Length: 473
Ligand SMILES: [Zn+2]
Image (tube, rainbow, N blue to C red; front, side):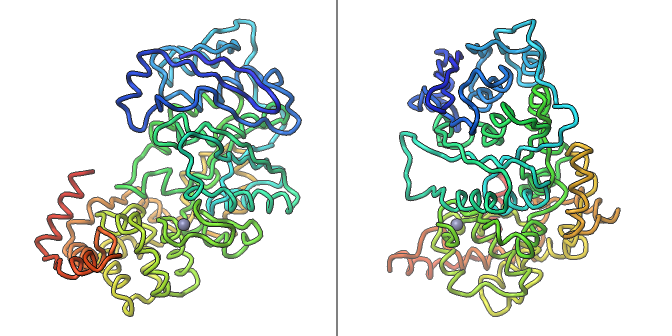
């Protein structure tokens, strides 16, 4: 692939020229490079940056990598030469050649004496929690999805995130939003790599002495606890491959929240984060989450647990209108089963048939390690996933909301295995009840409603459902 890098009217422009083989591969891959996606990618430059010439060539290259790296076959040729160090890191860790190389170009170093952090900010609960934990001079950088061939404004709504960006500014802290169509390079639209939303944060380093790039990645994502079970490589293989590439441009990746779960980030926001207007839902408006997406359902459940409340039956009915929520509840194990179980363990569920069934389904999880109380502690091994200087400032903040984990709690994190729970008889009984209550089709019409009533899932049928879910994994 070739990329011509230029700038115009406050925008960085990347003209993509995929090789024929890359387009052929793209036609098969999903997610992959959209053969009909934009070939001119734009990303708005931060205030004070006149054009692409103001950026260290390696920063320019890193932004380009965040857009196309997964789709590069064997070579990525840029119009601006890169340092030998960056080319070496890409070759070794991302597995393709980056060029041309300017042998005289010194790599961008971590600015001496600076502790300025750029945060890839989304406005969601975890991201706002990261903001709350990080020092005052942290620069909040939001990637705003814009343009795109198949953009349907009815689904994705940036307003809530933009409200959070403004809230950060009102608090006297640096924040900015960068419009970009980079998500439409991929089919279906989305981040080409998990940290593509860090592109504006990388651009910020053009004029600011940014010494670390922070991501609001929490414990569950760091160790894969929200999927099947604990993995020992923090962030997984992808992060391990990318971390040296960020480090090569003097922007070491930092995960200031890797030691705490979404249960703790929810507590942070409930107690001290309201002024940041956190909202993880990307479909609702500011202060008005859609209440029908998976994030609304799960985060709502956790907030209810902290408040000692049970979600109302109307809230549950609204959530069940969503095919995604129904899919989540019918899965075995459920995505984020660990935090759903934590929440259900801390609220009365007997009055609501669905919550009661979910409670039974999550019995094995709720029995695990003293009711999953490790989710409210700081998983100390993850504190190494941020630079030492950041840790000195962030750890006292974390400790205001969570105690350091005991050795037994650390072991409990490392032993978590959601997939192993589904064969438990309690789980299967609960799952049978959930499948009975949650049709996989939307009970809008009388016909569907009647059929949903008729379908009586036997225990054997439910077990088959579990087995097929296990096979899909
Ligand atoms: Zn929502």
